[in-house]
View 1: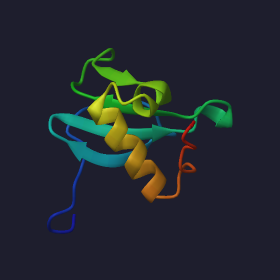
View 2: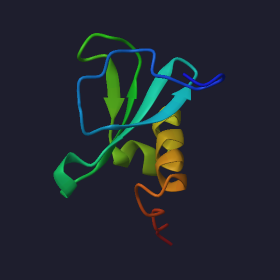
View 3: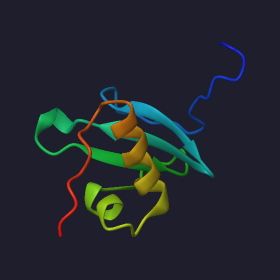
Length: 86
């Protein structure tokens, strides 16, 4: 492992998710979910239900960890930048 490399802190059992990084006590992921409805995930523990997810919560700004996960996914080219409604 390279010096300074960021790694997930919590167990995550989805093999198609891409680890994005960490924010506070969350491990952040992007999941393509088969291409139908990709999502972002903020995991805060090892237990299965210890996570929050959903593009809607990132887009409406109601979950800071998911807002950051979406920004990272866009920066990494995993999803297109969301269009803002006017």
